[in-house]
Image (cartoon, rainbow, N blue to C red):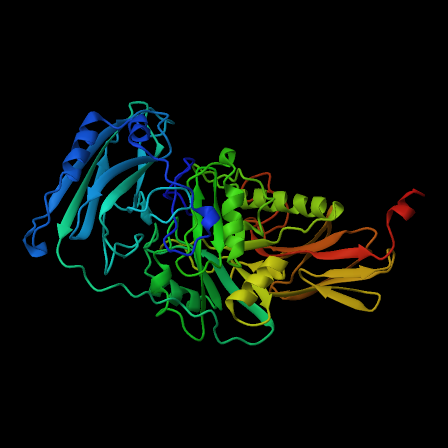
Length: 550
């Protein structure tokens, strides 16, 4: 998990949508008034400063109006709201808005969280949850930013600077026992607006191989959130990793959407998305339409998540909880999986929280199949932010009809996919019985007691261990030769296994497949090298007719 410095937003129902395409049902009426702002703990000095901002003088010649700076200060106690909205008035003729901020970081006892505060911006269209006023978010990654018609700091959206009441939003996701003192300066720069910014969105198709297996990393960050790589550097890293596609998932902003056109090409499909970073976990919105923003300012108790999950699906996209057992603040997943389309069970280098995610996902497979529900596919991603984090380690290999946005998303949604630590790992996984065959993500229907041969052919994992797992747990294990290539076959029946999935593990640090390695003394396996989604086995006669005789 690489989101240690992620922005950590939260629960107040106030939001945005950057374009005018959001459904009318997602546009609540503005509700924020001056009393709401005072309740957030703003100091009197901040309110006075706001008065100065709204007292801007009458219109003058645009090139003769000097810059105007407003200073907003205040104190937030522990237990402050997840978001604090600081209003300022923008008169006619403003060319650019520049914002800078800081806050105190008093000493705290060991083990006690210190002050951490994020920042973003909403324009005159308001701060309503899911509304259209969003103009950008940089979390805690930047201390200053600018917004203008012709450009903006990464993380923020270029566009018109219209007169009206704007808001700086603070996100104090950790507040020290002494409280948090903040200082925000807003500078209004006057003049003729620059030319309109023209976004360059990536195409939704790249040169593919028809129906085939395509490798892709669905969780990546750039300078548009808390990453340090430019989009061009991310795309170069994806090509170097042997990937066919990537998904752009910067935290809580779509500002990178309009700059992915040049880095894309006939050899690399770039799908648009967002990592929605809430106070109760992070989730990936994969396959967003250009510029379509997804709000993050809610907690699980607010019951807003299903609404935004529907918003993503209405665009043909996928909802994917990310790194659900990540140990960092606000990263653990608290929303449940009933509104998810897949789950990220492998995030970056293999660690104990990935083990937990796989265990939870595996348990859910059995429950879903027993109850006749759709099962949740697994995906794996690098979550790479900057060097030395490796783009494409791990990634997801998906069988798609072609290398297009819709085909890739369809393959991920159906679970026709497996996870690999790198492009050096290759595998084929099938189940064959009664003259029929099924592959990853598919269903094989056979007589209950008909023999089913499960076959895995793998390469690229020297000395690795192959595991076959069903709803009863691991039922077969076999070692690979030193060159890492081999075929493992195991026989079962549909009456004994509701599904079969495969794992390929590296040797333990001591060179064995037994207990004891650097990951922890009680973990029985080495790090993951590859993981498949299941093949479902269905008997064509009810199994319970047989079990009654046991």
